Length: 246
Image 1 (tube, helix red, strand yellow):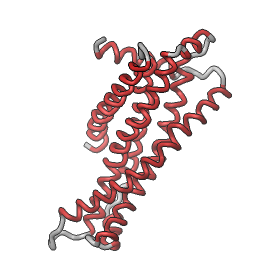
Image 2 (image 1 turned 135 degrees about the vertical axis):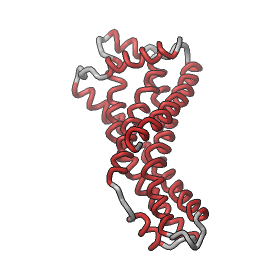
Image 3 (image 1 turned 90 degrees about the vertical axis):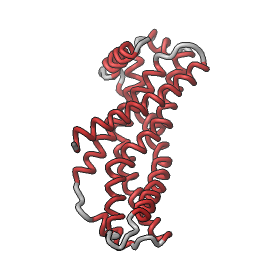
Image 4 (image 1 turned 135 degrees about the horizontal axis):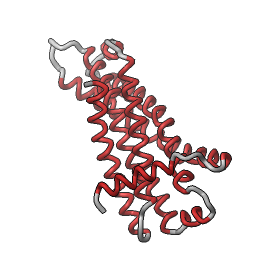
């Protein structure tokens, strides 16, 4: 099947996903379950990575600006900009694409190969809406919260790195953080996160829903889903950066 066919099936799938849920209580229960599986269980890994990435960015910046002619507050400034604009929304989203994307593909794919999705269709349930819409809502509205925490912990991790290594003082670092703060940069990060979250929910769901074969094929589909989700995030990151900051 060529790429155009996949793209067409993907958008046809979205048309079914965004129909009105048939039963409100069942939908709310499913949403609560997805909030725990895709949201709460992703918070720890995102926080852990953001903290140490922030420390690494601060240390590398300090080592590269080791000159008496360059003010030390630029370390905090560069760390803040790097984390808000790129590392938190894009890097963390790619990590979540691997963790969450493989889970979505494998769970839906397993339902497909064990004929559970066929059973839902026989009962008259819109399986695409039932299985995917709660995932989309959870990721699009919860992941900005995760990225906000990642931004804070990344900047905080840079400060801790300075305290532990002695490469720069806390005063200089905080002065750099406060220098030329632009609220739009945070809005830019949240916009990118919401777009990436939509991709993380729908692209793996597509690969899982249309899987054919047995358990081995489910594993292969999970791998393809993570790869294509990451590719789409990288491509969209380029265009979003060009449109919002260019």
